[in-house]
Length: 477
Image (cartoon, rainbow, N blue to C red; front, side):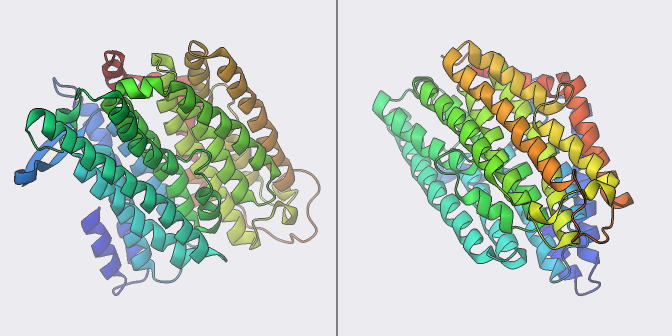
């Protein structure tokens, strides 16, 4: 993807549309590769791919790439939503298309690196690779307050990321003092015995970085601005992929590297999740901007991930993983819808909408599907994830689980309100003509709909891929 980004940038000199096609073919190729790897099955160690290359051996820094079931799920999600990001911006982005596709590909390359890196310094490198291209996507191709939103995104992510870097270096140094071995290898650092206070401090260094990217209250304020001002492709990448890197970091690194400190932190982790669910839902209902409402709903849905992870139950963890995948499809689709409406109506305000189903019945039907999926309709992927989270969390804290359950009710309120204010009711007289979805948009939406239905009726596909990692967590004290 890194090389493809460079080629896409240069190819604009040949033809203005060539970067789009190169980017699209790259993501289709990655999707096909993920499918082939999945069908090929894991090796005896449970890995689908494994690569080790010496990089800076003097300091124990190596290029360690591994793909297990959890990583494969998220890389597959990245590839599919990469196609969605390119297709959704096909007609929206008309200037500097080469540099635009360069940034899209480099963001996605950073994400794939995050999901497959098992050297902590390499992981941090790809964590930073995601940051700069995303900043450019918002700052150059965003909307009216794009500079402010881009800088806010950059500062929140960069400051929390530097805190994680300090925690990584401290962890490696503590391990060196204990074993006289200098290494950044994830596997080598697993099982390192840490004193209680040191473990808590290092755990918080990782946790704050990941929970900021998730995001959770109170470090969530960058998200609504970034989503609202980003171009459609940027919103799809942010909601569908970048938020998932925060969830992945908590699941992969915080829980496993600091098991005892994380279990001592369970109440605060679940509490932050519950607060995010309720507060995010309340603010979502208060919005008049289509995009901003969907952005706040993402905060609420990611709260379920925290609740599931910190329940420290098999069902809760698997529910969190299913929620991550299902939310990626459903929310990315809603942001694509927001972008399509803005491109047609030149407005995100729902007061400028109303009765749009009469003018664009295909858009209305698609929006209804993804709204009911987002609010947790049984038979679709989001329901499976949130149901498993609540069942798992019930064994840990009945009170917090009951409070989290109210989030499902709140989601139904703001989701159906979104549908009513934008597509139902009387047609807004200010809407004269509106182009409905064509073959390009409907084909993409059909893929996302099929994915959510498949997860809803056959969640075993996701559960089986994540089961190996969840079993590893079960043996952690």
